[in-house]
Length: 96
Image (tube, rainbow, N blue to C red; front, side):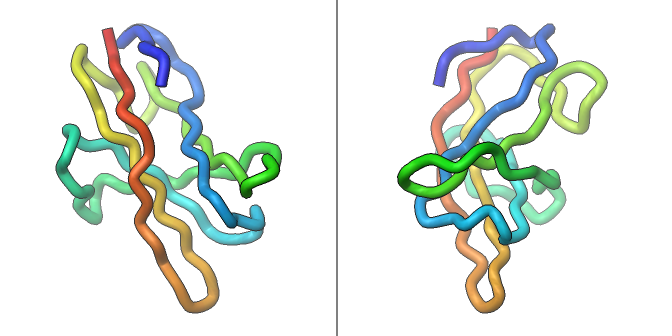
């Protein structure tokens, strides 16, 4: 992912292969290599479909539930379907 400023409020997107856009979706951010704890999940929404699935998106930055300091953050998506609930690692977000 491209670096973003810690002063910026913008959407972060996590690609979810095979998503239909009808499932529940959440996004979490952790230190790289650390799995998210339950309280770190934030409600997300689906963006426009791609040939592989959908992108999940969540607003981050000042005034949101996810305000960052400089560093690197691992993005995670959790999709809730009728039976399955996969937790999928996304990219690392560099914040400057």
